[in-house]
Image (spheres, rainbow, N blue to C red):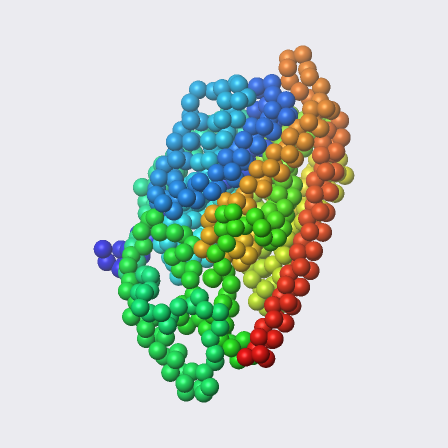
Length: 511
């Protein structure tokens, strides 16, 4: 295959990965059809939240096994898993809550598998431009809810059954067709492992002395470059690790510290490798895990229930509002959530680099921003009674949720190393399983407490804001806790950096 044909094939593969990612974020469109679905099947708000929570459980709890599957078997098998999972949704309808939860769980697992495979294939096809290559699947995932809700509102306005059929057929078809174009094209130049006899190229030693003269230093650097260029190359396979393929620093990545010492560990994320049970004794792990749980739980509760918020406010504000009219507003809020989440991911991802590199500040400030925006969103949710203003809740929640997920993977890699990022990120995504369940079930319990069961079995909450206000009091407290813990983490991080700098100066003077 010629170089031009290989470049075209890689671009086609990234396009396929982007299309697959577009089908992976449909869990976040749940609130657009959940109220009508619950009304048709005579489900309580708690039962409806159980179904939505099952999808989140599949999406987040399967992170570790899915990461192992993607790394060991390649992206195509993972996408086949999503295709099978979505095929279950094409089967006969079910009214049993456990069966509905099982099907919802399958969609979450399939979405996680396909999204992981999409990111891996995009990153491996463009190893030197991973940020740009993976930006497209990430953006598509964030826009998934907006895409399907907008398409449904245009093609099937007010028709929940057709909307569900669109989700089932659309996700299945997009993934199935894109699967044939998703592949990893081998590269002719990727580093192999260094030969054992090249011990002088090892970078695991703590310190190297700066050469006495500039001429000697230039000679050493020239030797390093020449020997690095002699390393053998091989192609990338589909089962290559997403992280480790290019995560190690090159021989030329040499940094001199203030005491004139060459520090081989100047980029700790390239040399750290903490994973599995090794995370448990680390204070940093529990800091990030708790923050992840507190803030994602806040976001998931609104994401899954913004449709119920809209229905409760409209039923109280204008009891003559047509169900199709209310459904349009529900779809609009889902679109706002999706678009603002997309914007938040971009702002946080780029902004965190600017904060660190230009201002010399901590990435935790992005989490302070996220939890602060969450707090403002919860205040709005507890006070807005006019449904025309509910966009503030959906917009702020989407923005804060995007801030959170735009920076969190980078923080995990910096804390524990890039080599185990896939596994460590899977551990972190267990936090939303816990908090998401708690907050969603809390919302359902509060909503059911204010609801009346009509003669036909339908449930109606005529109390407007009071239908769910108590639930947002709890998430407001969770958001404030997120602000406090983030600020404490910044303080602790400053103390650790100051201690390391003192130790480095002492070592330099002793040497």
